[in-house]
Length: 309
Image (cartoon, rainbow, N blue to C red; front, side):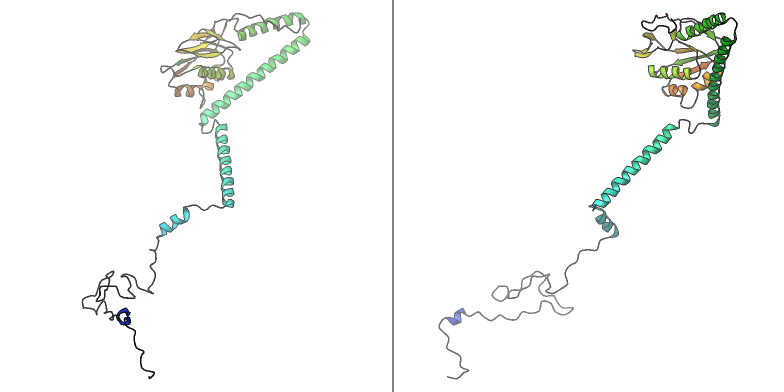
């Protein structure tokens, strides 16, 4: 038997041997010819089965990979900002900057609030300065009177008589302050009309305090004498002073120097502007003479006694 002879095949081996596959025809011809099977179409052999090495349509082995579309500048900026990437050091710096900004804001606000006269007109500032000068002059005059009284007591030959005169004068002055005697003199009349009913007791108390600071010596409101221990309270459809209800218009009779009293009410941000914000109507007049004749009963102290007795 020669080497080129093939061994005899066993029976049935030919039936198990696969048939030879015919070569695949090209899927597309040259330009201008009809295309072959489209992408995704399965090329079948004569037996209807997919040939060995079949590659699905649309995929080119060894071809370039598909890349994501290039992002625009706005998309890249958004991707860089969100989600935020904050480190511990950046968080500490942000907290410190926030505290610093809050402190600066508070400081600026306090400086703005502390200067109530900022933005006032020149004539308003001059008027306020005149008012302060008037208060200073009154205090200097009072000091001068007390010095004169001391010298008179020291040099008077009849010190007992001089002391009695000064005692009577002091009693009269204290009676005016305590509201036990009537008083008259120059001053102003302040009338407040409140059609909306917005003026409450705190506004009247602020008005009283401003008048006292401007040098008011005797005050009467709607027939009620104002003394050191007077108090205000809100009542239904009105205000009560020392428990006595009063109704509008609220009329202040004030004895003092008109040149000091009226400007004190009209300073920027003062009583008049505050009342006008509440839609109240305010009027100030200067009669030739103010009479304060509402009296208060003198109270006998329960515990206090004169130190000279």
